[in-house]
Structure formats: structure tokens, C-alpha cells
Length: 144
Image 1 (cartoon, rainbow, N blue to C red):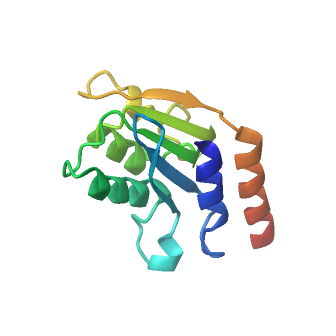
Image 2: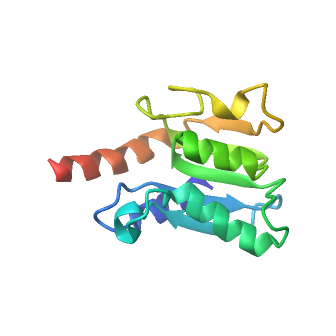
């Protein structure tokens, strides 16, 4: 699943930070994938996770609930994306690289495991982390 998210990240517009996300159903079938597109779309909410969740919700046909799905993302989600996946009732989150500056799945905050919320997805972190970090490192090196 993380390899699909990595492929999505690699296809990001060259101006956007290469983060990729993909949503899978309970059988492991891909429902949607996306890359960050904030620069490409001029939209501050166009994170890979948000775009992929929107696309998957349109396919599932339940309006907005993505129960029993897995969201795979190359970078630890921020607070906006963590909140969105909780609101969408995503069952499982798998991510690659940790984000100590803005991460909301354990680094800076832990939105998805907050016991005050009515939904808490299963989390698996650090999957293919070296590959995810390498993609980001290459992007930021090119920006300097």
C-alpha cells in the first residue's frame, strides 16, 4: 500500500512537496490515490490525504464514511489530515516518514489516538520510511 502512495508522491507537480496518499478497501483494492497539490491548485487544503479521501468517498457511495478502509500516506499526517481521516472513520492508517514539525499522529500531537474522540483508527508507522524520507530529501535538496 505504501508503494502505491510512493508512486502517487513521485507524480506530484514539481512545485509541490512530494507526499502521496492512497485509500484501499477492506479487501486491499485501491479506491483512490493522490499527491500533494497545494501549489498546483492554489489550495491550502490540497494535501494528498484530503484529495485521496474525497475521491474514495465519492467511489464508496456512502457520502463520507470510509469505514474499514486503509489510508496509506508517505508522510505522517498534519492536524488537518489527521482530523479528516478521523471524521471519515478510516479504519487504519499506514504511514512512512515521521514529521516532527507538524505531525499529528504522535510527533507533535496525536489526534488519531485522542480518547476524547469517537473514532480512533489503527495506526502503523514507519513503513518504508527510508524510501519516503529519500523522496522528501531529494525534493528539499533541489529547493536549496
